[in-house]
Length: 79
Image (cartoon, rainbow, N blue to C red; front, side, top):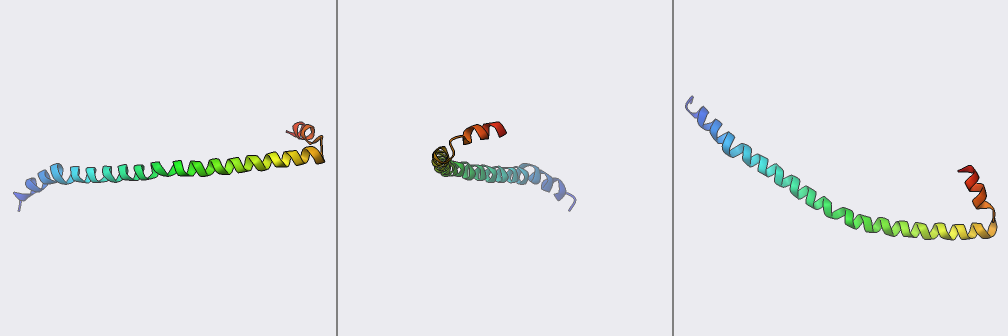
């Protein structure tokens, strides 16, 4: 039994520990590659939403220009 301890220690150091390190490194690499592709699709959606919001703000500003011509001066005074 005592003569098995060095053999188990050597196998653990040179086989099991590197194998575990490689396994977790691979999992991390896969996780990063999966999540790296998602923001590109999310960015397109955010750009689309921002463009819609910009069009709405422009429309509201045009309405305010007609309804209340001095609204820009008032806003700048309070800002």
